[in-house]
Image (tube, rainbow, N blue to C red; front, side, top):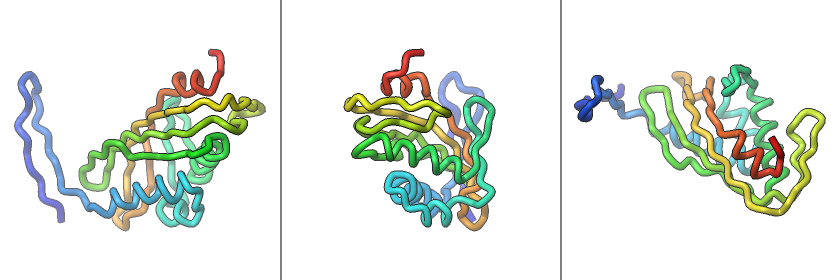
Length: 162
């Protein structure tokens, strides 16, 4: 059972904010997924933490499966040497966690995630941020993600002309 604490609205705000003491295991599982699963490429961790019917809701309204999401991280891992993922800011309530995530690396190998397109490496650093909201089921399994990302900045850093 989680306890709730009410926070008075800030000046100019109309609504009160409710903050729950969320299970720390959700945060630990998310960070393990990011570091061991997506950054290091441990597929067993990905499959253990993410539900087989996981759904990633993308900014353009499309969705991806667990495997498609893992393929995106694999493409970044393959293209970026010294690839790192950092959970910069984590806010949670109940079974939901919001996280601002940074991804960094040096673009040293071709990026082949795009359909029929290969972006040649230029050797420069790449920094990419996303903000996602994650939902865990009662057993601590990640079942859903709503992601927002600045793809234009990423594309520019990869050397694409838009």
